[in-house]
Amino acid sequence: NVMLSWQRTAYHFQPEKNWMNDPNGPLFHKGWYHLFYQYNQESAVWGNITWGHAVSRDLIHWLHLPYAMVPDQWYDVNGVWTGSATILPDGRIMMLYTGDTHDVVQVQCLAYPADLSDPLLLKWVKYQNNPVMVPPPGIGHKDFRDPTTAWLSPDGDKWRITIGSKINTTGISLVYETADFFKYELLDGYLHEVPGTGMWECIDFYPISLTESNGLDTSANGQGIKHVMKVSLDDDKNDYYALGTYDPVKNKWTPDDPELDVGIGLRYDYGKYYASKTFYDQNKKRRILWGWIRETDAEALDILKGWASVQSIPRTVVFDQKTGSNILQWPVEEVESLRSDSLEFNAKLEPGSVVPIEVDSGSQLDIVASFELDKETFEVTTEADIGYDCPTSGGAVNRGMLGPFGIVVLADENLLELTPIYFYIAKGPHGKVETHFCADELRSSVAPDVDKIVYGSKVPVLDGENLTIRSLVDHSIVESFAQGGRRVITSRIYPTTAIGGAARVFLFNNATRASVNASIKIWKMSSANIRPFPLDQL
Ligand code: DQQ
Image (tube, rainbow, N blue to C red; front, side, top):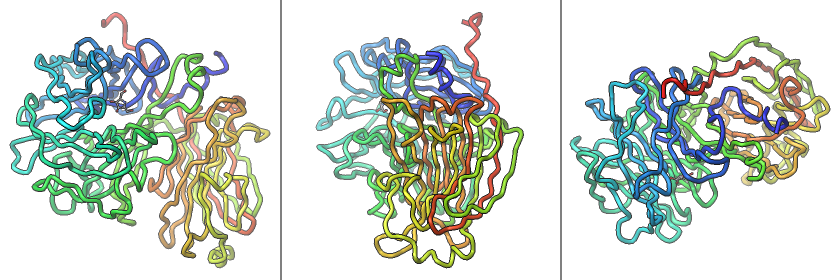
């Protein structure tokens, strides 16, 4: 067990023990950020789902609080499942969540704080007439869950929410309208549907500004606004999103690009990341995204180590005005308060080079790296080899003309364990030069029974842009952002020797032809202060 204890993260949110999954009902209230989460009080596997609760002033340092809700009513005794908060104009907070009933039916329930003047919102009241929504005709009793934050209907006197479901293998989003959060009416039709995508879990639906860098309240709509729709696909356990337009009169959302429709196109994260949820932070006028980072080892190992899962560092979400076709995700600025002792390094990386960088706490780092093809290489980009796909192209050992090159993190001195995060430039099927962003976990651990996969996707790169990576390294988690957050890959890895002070960082260029000018800046990251609730307060 000692061998596994160092896997715990230093600045990612984790309960002290046991199982955690989806983030629930994030909100800002009276100076505190609140995070609720799916939690098993009893063990390190999924079950007995309760709402864990923690608060923070800055989204980085946390105070654990007593459970917000436990499965103690007929309508949620099989689990207090995922839900979302809505803050009403008069300051009231409405929390809608899914209850799994005593006879295993998914129903929607309402809860609210007992005392709004309490900044910690310690006590939650379940509405006496719960459930407030039950599966409508034609919807499976086990296919009706995860209500969203509400937004105002066009006439402004009612609220709408959407809930994921499926009909056969078509993923659908049902929309309900309510005036008071107690009584709900199912609207005709679906907000959206996509054949073949299966059950839609944890839908998120929110406006995004095309011109401003601030976030928008969930009810915003009109000129200069698009709507993001995100679904968590139960069938493949990934979070997919698409940009589109919301017509509140027709109650329809239409994707900008039908070929990149929700569930078949872009992902929030090409690594391990699921059941995510945004909220509008009225404190700093930004939209913040939370996501659940799952384990990728055997369940028996989770039981052995006594805990499972981590929450991502919260990310701000904005529209990418440069490409116009994706969002940008970026770690909240507060995470930079953990930075210290920076070092900078520049090097020309010739084909086949691996350059060690001297860091003394390689398991807790914030890394920013930038790569530029050397001028004479740039001239031959049109000769790049054809065809590349991170997951199937063999990882960082597979050499091509113009890739891979990038950084290596959580590596031991002898490179027995290492996780390369890299770019690879290749021509696509139509001869166009494309850039791929990958994370190679094939050699991330010598341990058996852990997933060893190469993750990644193509990333848009505009003329004149360098290739950039930001990686947050935290013991067994690496969150990597390419091109300012156009693509993200979260790695959940299990090194056994590349741990603590022994973890190293390298720059590498494994291309056969490209010379790359690299510059890297690395900060040491302090541990966040994540404290238990003081017992004398109970
Ligand atoms: N997790 C919850 C469900 C949700 C799923 C149950 C997604 O409400 O659909 O723990 O991970």
